[in-house]
Each structure stands twice: as C-alpha cells, then as structure tokens.
Length: 177
Image 1 (tube, rainbow, N blue to C red):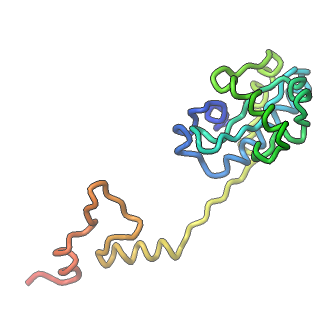
Image 2: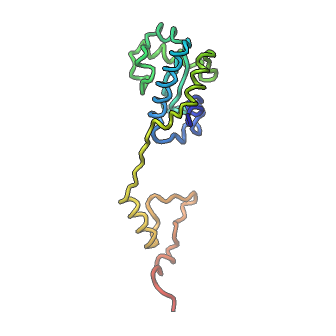
Image 3: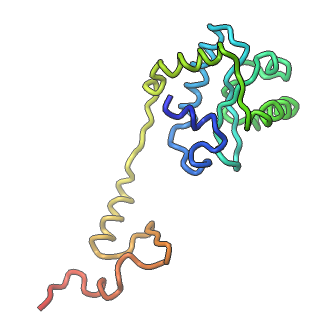
C-alpha cells in the first residue's frame, strides 16, 4: 500500500500539493480490502474515506467504530463514498464530527491493526492500473518552440526571464561568417 501513510495524514502528499493520479482508486481499493479483513478479524473499527477539500491533504482514510457509524446512519456502502458532502445533511454533520477529533489522533483496535498489516502484505497496488497518456500535439508544439528558439508557453522562470535571449533568437539558424 504505497500511498497508505500519505492517505492517513492530514499533511500527506506534501500537504495536498502533490496528490498522485489515480489516488481515489488507490484509496477505494485500500478501504475495500482493509474493511473486508477487519470484518473477517471481527474488528470493531472500519476504514472510511474522508474528503477535506481545500484544506491540507484532501483525500484521507479515517477509522471509526462500526457502532458509531451505525449510530449516525452511515451504512457500509457509504464507507468509500467519493465525497462526504453528498451525504444527507444530518449524516454529513455527524460524519464530520466523528472525524474532526481524529485528524490529530487516529485510533483503532488490535484487530484493525491485524487487518492493516494483512492488507499491506497483499500487494493491493497491483490491483490497479493507472494510465497516463502523452499529449502529442502539445509535445510537438513544445519541441517546435525549442527548435525555433522560442520560449514555450508553459515555461516558467521565477524572475520572468525568457528561455532564449532576443539576440539569440534573431540569429537562430544563421551560420557565423
């Protein structure tokens, strides 16, 4: 579970600035597997997805007692909801209250720890395929800009200096006499 530690820390993924592609799918697989193992080991706790949009790491895995989740009306099929804001209003408030105190103190029982250890040994990441595609048009434009000594549109320099000097651009492609 290569991203588990990041998913359980409010400061994970460089405080939310470096969230990898496919993280929702990774979190979903982790939660589903962890909860299946937790149920098999008869843990009182369940892993739950929790989104904190706009604040630190937006994608968390939290832990709560199954009895508390039942009490506030969160059924098992909602344990991996993609956005807690889609819950009915009273459930959303209870859900938020349940996890607010856990943001600094995540707790679970020994049986959940067994489930976490077992899940970590199951190569869960191998159950995912994250595809990244190359934008060939953008890449061709970028390479053409470089070849013709033009500053690419996506170039950034902290002092706003161009990639190529204007004098260099004027003589691009000309041979010296």
